[in-house]
Length: 589
Image: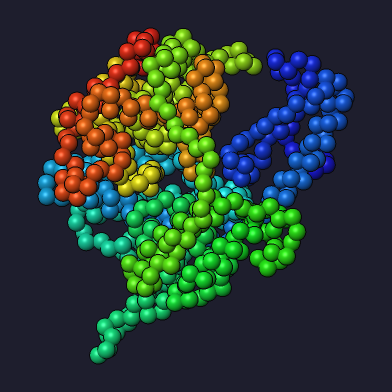
């Protein structure tokens, strides 16, 4: 069988294609993450003749095969060093999560501690049951996480390899061990991070950590610090480790690491004392002559910087991209100055002048927009009651498309904050108010520290049956509110954003490029909170913006759940027939 025949493809006609055939191809599983999560695509062959269309499709298939080979050639195999690094990061995330749960429990209340212990023991029992009865389903969820990690490191994904299977199994073991760690902390067993690391190291049967030797004090020097060495690479590693402690997303840490290491590669410096304005100016000059994504582009990835600088017709990166790198370097410089590795942050003020011509800001959806978007007949037929144009049958699992817009205009959550919500993030607090917890865990991410918050469930969402829907999902043993959505490049929002921004909002005549998109549900809530005269600090508390100075530094968060519910309940959208949008979520599908 020829190599070409291995590319899954076919030619087809659609109801709207006239006499033309289409070529449909499917992305190989191991390359899906490399192309943004897209699993297939189609293009018109501009021909209605079967024999000609078949020949064209075979030629396209051959071209695709070469392209896929080229993409794979730029990727590398999974190594033992990679496995160790990935496991160390996952262990660190599990330790941080364990301490997050511990510190989120009132240790001075025996009742609170016991309640938290019971909850964790229930989670432990449920996980044990899942692993015993449906290990493959759990491992398939691990696969999504691992594919995103390996793709970000440009490592080939071979699910059937022994190394990959062992890595996946160790992830399962660490997740299981994490619940034990939480119990140990809640029971005040005095466990240290090093204890957890050693326990995990034994479990995965690998030497993951280099144990440091004791540095004894001398009459003139009590202990050797990192600043005594002051090497660039050591300082960078210390900075990245601090970011991990601050619960920065691992993908973001990887991006910072790439920029910082490239700075060392371009400048050739090996100590922090060598950082100067002149060195940075030279770095900017070199960057202005380098292409975008040079380590991924087949034309440049095997060449040194010197070789690229001698090449002709190089499509150089833009000013904005260089400034993004300088932003990372400036933040690193600030940290280095505060921690004594630099006397002065020479990166500060070195950004290039990049004027944005014609920049526009997002708008809120007005009453007429909302009336069009949430027209019951249009909205329901396009979301929860959608019909396939091909099979003419109802499309299943469309609840995410129903809830995402409604949740957005009544909570003000960002799209990514909504799509990563777990059922346990919907909690009823002591005074009976239902709240949505937006937090940073090993499973969820927030944009900034101010983004961590609790938002009341708006009464209109309760009228629409959101609590009944949550109960349905719990009965079905789901864990995430938007369980249908798949992770693409570390985020869950791509599918719903594409649906609203590229299809639905255009169809109802509301969409404006970058100005009126799904994300504007957040702007809509904020706009209406201001219209209703809600205090600005309450608004900032609800939507996760930085509070004004006095409240931030002296007032903490003075608003309880009832106060926040009272204020957010002032928002209403009278032009919308919400009664027509109500679904019977108690009735199982």
